[in-house]
Each structure stands twice: as structure tokens, then as C-alpha cells.
Image (cartoon, rainbow, N blue to C red; front, side, top):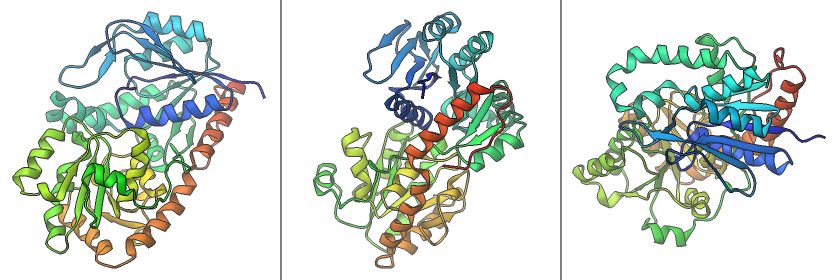
Length: 399
């Protein structure tokens, strides 16, 4: 079968670490391994255009500027370099993500050249609001406007991918008219799998052999980690446990200070981001993966935890309920309620063997989200779009 040329436009990409960039990079690498020519267009780390050497995919960087009061960069005047790169790559299909400057330039360049476009949605307006601090006072008023902006962007694409049924419902609710295909971000079941406790990693990180609750991911405002931390004292009243936070972000310093003021330093370990070889092993240290974020359209880290055979305690918000079968592989708790979160953690840890049994069920749920299966679905979708870009209406089952 003939190889396709696929171009991805990403306004947030390495060295930024976020779910959209990670999931699309994994998809891109998977399609490259299947023999397709894959390129990524992303903001540079300075005010200059350049290409990066990469053995699997071509990465073109567009000059950028740092966003005020944020840690990431936006492409600056991206129209011309984007047009030049599109002409050079001559893609069969262009895959878009967020309606930011680089993606908008890629959409315009693609439409002007008759190149089919697919929009992949993997984030909610809360991500933008909470990562631009000056917008937070206007969060409620901005939310609906940002949804309109997002949906207007995707309505210009030939087709749209929602990573979960929840995401599809939100898009339809806010006016999306284009064909929607539900395809999971997927998780690498060979990389993330149940493992024996990695004692070497535990010693290196200073993690004691106690019942352990883990969170991994960005530490930014929309993750609501203060809810997570406030649950800790209620757990410690009933049993001796340890809490591990893997990741970094704009809130880390405040959260470390919060733990100190609450006198919890002995019970909480902040690790920072781990190298890939260690990261997939960190889940082996956990009895429970707990997540308090109310704004997840899927949650890659929760998928990874489930694939690793870990019981889940999650906020009953966004798409997280799709990954938690109540009482089977974990529990949900009302958004923002620390005491309820602690109660769910205790319900698992206080019963011997329950975390392990729930972990087996988590693995079974994760197997429905096999990354290889998602890549096959994306490959079929892109071929279908090429055959009939403006009338693609077939819907796919969730991976």
C-alpha cells in the first residue's frame, strides 16, 4: 500500500510536556514506523526558523516568542514559513490540533492548496485559561467564548477526531458540524504494563515501602493538585501511607510550600519529570494512581497507570469516568472534594489485596486503548479522507 505524506501542526511541542504533544508525537512515530513520511511543524525555541535532525520524523521549527507570564512559546508571524514548509513537504493530509497561530497558518495554507485537514481535539478551554494567569479572573465568561473559537476552527477541517465519547459530546454540544471520529489517544501496552516493584528506582527516589499513592503529570493550575494534597491528612489519620508526585509545572513551588506548611514533608515526595527509561517503571511503586483534575478529555497518565495495573481514584469530571468502573478498578469522587478523595483511597488501601485486584481490572480496561490499534485507525481515517475529503462521514468505534 502506498505510503502517505502526513504533516502535523503543533503549537505546543517539546520541550513542552503536555498530553496533546505527547499523544500526537506517539501517533506520528507509529505511522513513521509503518513506512509513512511524517513531518511535524512546531514553534522554535528562539526567534528563528530551523529544522531538527530526527531519525524517524522531520521536525521544522517556526520562529517564536515567549508568551507573557507563561512558560511556553507561540509561533510569531508563522504564515510564510508555514507555507514554505507545506510546499516543501507536499503533504497528502495535514493534521491540526489547537486553534493557535501555527495551526491557523497551517489550516489556511492547506485550504489554499486543496490539502485535506483533520483536527484532533485533546484539550479543554480550562487548559488555556489556567495556563495564562491574566485570563483566570475572566474564566467563567471566557469558557463559552473559547469553546466557540475551538469549534469554529474544527468546523473548517474536513474531519475531526475526538479522543473520547465525552470529547465528542462536548464538541457537538458547542456546535461542531464536521464528521467526528472517536479514536483513543492509546497507550503502549508493551511499555506500560504490570511490573514487580522497582526497588532500585524506589531507593533512588527515596520512596519507602509503604502503601503508596501516585500522581504523574503536569503540575499546573487546571490539575487542581491542592485538592490532592488536602486529602493526605485524612488518609494519614487512618493508615501510614506515602504520596508521590512525578512531574513539574507552574504550580510545583506553591505545592511544595503547601506540603511544608501542612507538616507533610515526611509523607510526600516530589520527583520532577523522569527520563523515559525510569518513567514507565514509576507506576510499579504505586498501589493507587490518584488524579484530581476536572478538565481531562482523556488523561494519558491515567491510561498509563491503568495499563500498568494500578487501581485508580479519579475526579468524577471530564472523561475520567470512562477509565474508572466504580468499585471494579477504582473509585470516583466529586470534583474538588478532598475528604471524598481520601475516603476512596482508604476504601482501597484498608482492604488487603483490593488494590491488586483493582489493578488487574485497570489493565483490562487499558487493553481497549492499545496504541497500535489507535494508529491503525488513524491510518485508515487519513486514507479515507484522501479518497473523499469533504464527505467523510464514517464514524469509528473508540479505540
